[in-house]
Image (tube, rainbow, N blue to C red):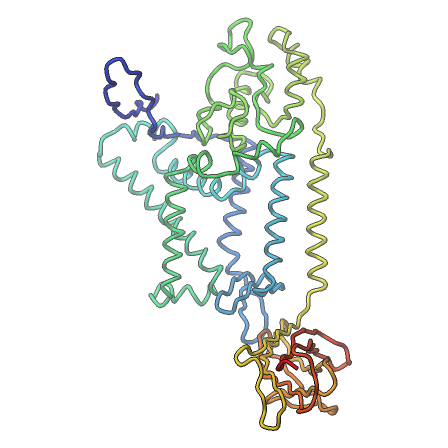
Length: 500
């Protein structure tokens, strides 16, 4: 049973003119059928794990001391900080996030070269939430045939109740998704009561509504159209595959020619279309590799179930390499359908080669990025010093004839404790350093104290006495020296004066 075709009326063609091809065709709704099997169980397990992580991670607590957020994973927009358990990333360390994105991209390329579109079929958020929405739809409206019959019915009480309940549950899931998202940017335990009492900010409600709407529309309505038309990945993922990649494929050498189960001289495929009925994108895997195929493998479970009931070997549709597919076709394609052809085709198969040039290149790139990020993290400075010289005026001439430059010092401390550093100025002899409101060490050098996990600001004045002959621009360096006499950080600037 299928829905009637939905077409747009075309304008009558002018006499003698060729009718123009329609530029738009309405979507043909896909009604995936429920299926059970090993692949489906794996997908349910991954779905539960992904949803569990997404919804519960904001609730995990992590003690960072007083006046610090105790949420394990938090993007603190107000403080300009990203917290991930014991890791704290500041805005100027955005290159760590860039490295993680590069790492994720290379990992996705490597996974695709090994196992095809495993990301799309099992862990992509669009796939996970669409699977969840389809589960709700099946529980309320029934399986494939029941949903098709319901869509053909007029607006009866049954139609309104089932459709209304489905969309209500969808909206509830979408709202939970949007609510969980805003908790990654606000403390979950603090934001929840404020959100439900109307005390949250307008930005919180905006992003809650945005993610609620997008989840509802993409997982409930758009579904396979996101994968086919909106997502760019299917259009270049073929470049990541080769003949040794494991992809979902139909073993045509075994299934063709198609025919009834008890017919003579036909292959194992009985043309039951079970593989088509369970496909979430509505394609026929027997037509070969297609852009719309997300590699979910549900057609494998559907076909295996049919083969089991027909008492034939499973695996007519399977995760297979194109190299094995070609080898089996060459060895068994000329044999008549039957056990001999199946045995010959399976015998020439080879274990997939996971260690090959492409995967080794990806592994090397992954190792390089991990090493670079690890090295950058080990060499990461917990103390920073930014020196900003006043630009207006460039310099001040004092009443005694001396020249003064003013600087703003911003001292950042990425640790939870208070640190004290002596400030030293590396400059030509005669230049004098003063830091306003700062104490001095026994040697007379200004002492700057940090604010735990924050930034302190100091005002520094560098003066050249009258009569000191200097160029118009003199390089100077500010150094922070710890209690052991080691230079913790140094920053360069310039001292400007009049033209000599």
